[in-house]
Amino acid sequence: MRLIFTSLVSHGHLYPLLPLAVAARDAGHDVLFATGEDMRPVVEKAGLAWESAGFGMREAFASFFGPDAPPRDPTAPPESFYPVIGQVFGNVLPRRFVADLTPLLERHRPDLVVYESGNAGGAIAARLAGIPAIGHGFGRVSPGEVMDIINGHIEDYANEIGVDGVKLTSFGDPVIDICPESVQSPDFLAETNRIPLRPVGWAEPGDLPAGVVGRDKSRPLIYLTLGTAFGDEGVLKRAIAGLARLEADVVVAAGPTVEPAQLGEVPANVRVEAWVPQTELLPHVDLVVHHGGSGTTLGAFGAALPQLVLPQGADQFTNAEAVVAAGVGGQLIGAEGTEDAIFEQSRKLLADDGVRAAARKLADEVAAMPSPAEVAARLPEFAG
Image (cartoon, rainbow, N blue to C red; front, top):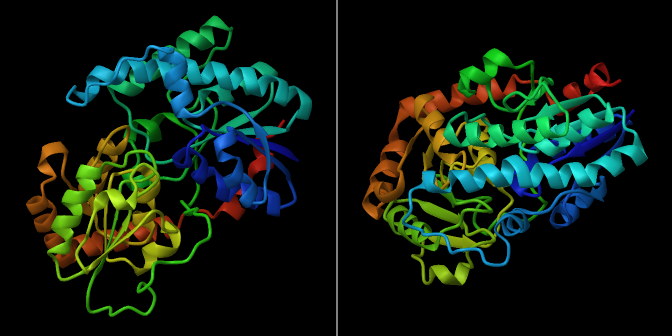
């Protein structure tokens, strides 16, 4: 069977699809992954064929604003940026992906398209080509004002080119869902043909920081990250200062948007890295302090870890709410995220038996979800 997977040009949108794509290839299917040039090395390191489709987030926003983009006011409320986000994710990106995927689908004529749920252009291109398709989620679905705006633009574009049946995240197609049911959006569960898939973390191979393996386990190990897109020097410095006060060791992944040198001298119990293999690190960790990105949130769910979430944007706020509602952690939003508050909340989470019990229960739920190989075996059900 010929399969085309497609995702937005972002690690957070690409990584969740790779375990199933690799499992499908290992099952003997002909798998091609269509995404932007920036993600080509990741796809090829996974041993998958790649073709270009779409463009990255920076190019998408630059395409919307043109050469005279006004600087964004960092003090403006997030809601003020919703109209721009709606246009970029609901119009600019879908149009570009449809333009790129249409000839690609014509050349390859796959039996099935697996499109990442944020990539509406993948769903629309498959519908235009008359090729069966299914969605693939990248985390918890986060309904709300910004999603309503995005979906309004998607619906307008779809109607403009004669595609009907547009629905929230699914376009009426089945959706592979990597979020445990107990923390998934009730609205999504009620309206979607859901195919559960265990969230298997994906990270490029790499060595763990020195001192992680074989460390003194009488001292907790805390992992601090703001992910690949929302790094903030000030937030990281405050978090490092708060966490360093604990009788614990701290590993920091600065990410691609903050240079480790920007964080200056750090205490002796803190180690700063540009990048860490998160999937390999989590089994060694006792607490994750992070931004609330889907990959880190779900990874912590699967590893039975308490979480302190410092949401920075996008779906991170609703992910943080889900963490709190599930009893597996806490959240500090905006100005709440002081050094003292991060210290105090982290101290409490490390000592809270109830949080650890809730995290173990959620990890058991994740472990019981179907594996990528099991879901790959079902893919022919959805092909034409």
